[in-house]
Structures are given as structure tokens and as C-alpha cells.
Image 1 (tube, rainbow, N blue to C red):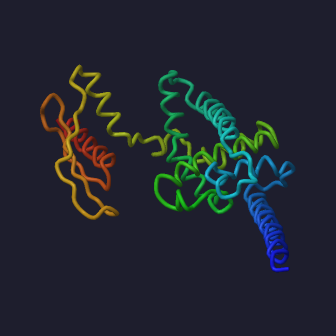
Image 2 (cartoon, rainbow, N blue to C red):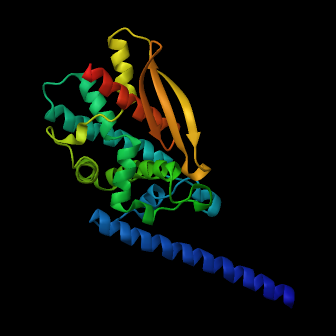
Image 3 (cartoon, helix red, strand yellow):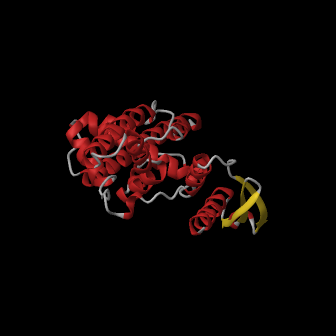
Length: 254
């Protein structure tokens, strides 16, 4: 008797879990519809767009993640962005347009757009390994934004996808705005050394202090053996960017 009761309990528990997941999915789809401002017809496509591969471990019944849709959305995003830049900057060459496109659709821009859209609230992912903060969630959000673009394209076509991209990712594009200010100071400094036939910049960490969760790095940058700048940041990458920025200031002043 006890054995049968246990079996019945396990069976009911599995049904409850399934219903709970379905209700959660419907709730998130409803929330997504409000943000998209249209009624979703193919729910499976959008559920897939919201599912990161880490979620497959949490829910083995889910077979596929958003990776294929991410591939499609990336292609649509690049096409729409290229079209906008092609018409907006008619006097610029291919190199300029390529650089601006890369700037507009990089991971930081996509994750910020996804955050503003509220994508994290409707996504399915394993918080155990990724959490809600840091670089991991930024990558997940950026990838999910591309997957969502892919889903919109499949559901409503290229014009709807273009409208979505223009509204949520490219809305700030303006020829005379600060949106195109290049903040990749390491890249700028490297371009400067190449253009002037100098040795590439070399970076050296001279100080590292603070606890693991709140580190501060100090980095020096050298060009042809000469100290050009010193920068600080909460990680090596940011400290190198700051050092490059200081070096560029020094070079431009000279």
C-alpha cells in the first residue's frame, strides 16, 4: 500500500511540475507579447528563442535551445544594420561602414538593449551556473536578443524584424550624436602605432589590490619602450583601456 501511495505521489508530482512549467511559459509569452506589441502565433518558436542551452539541464523535456535562432537573428540584424548605414552614410567607404556596424551590434549594445526590453524577465536559463549579474548574463542576453530577432523574422517577416531592430537597437543612431564615439582606446592606440610604423603597445600590470570581488588593477602601457600612459580598472581589460586612453590624450596633446 505504501509503495502504491509513493507511486501515485510521484505521478501527481510530475503532472504538477509539467503544469507549472506550462503556466510559466504561457505567462512569459503573454509578457513578451505585450513588449512586442503583437499576438504570437507560433509559440514554439518564441519559447525556443527564450531558452538558453543551460536550461536544458534544468528541464530535460526541453530538447533545443535558441542557438539556431541566434544564428538566423544575427544574419537579419547585420543585414538591417548594413542597410541603414549604407543609406545614412553615402559618402563613406566599406571600411567605415563595417567598423560602424561592428560598433552598433556588439555584445555590450545587444545586452543593454535586451536589458531595457526586459528580456531577462522572460528567459529560461539555469541561474545556478550563470546568475543574474556579470559577464555571463550579458552574453546570454545578447544571444537571446539575436534569437528573438530571428523569431520575429520567422513570425512576421523582414519588415517587422527591421521595425523591431530599429526601435530597440538602432534607435539612437544619429550622424551628429555621440553614439558613434569610439571607446575602444586599445584599438585606437594600436591603429596609431601601425600608422606611424611604431612597435605595438605593450601592457604591464604594476599593481593589483583589493578583495576578489572588488579588485583594482593598475596598468602601464609602453610604445617602443617608452611609458605612454597609466590606467586603473576593476579588471585588467578595463585598466588597459584606461591606460590606452591616457596614452592617446598624451599623444594628441603633443
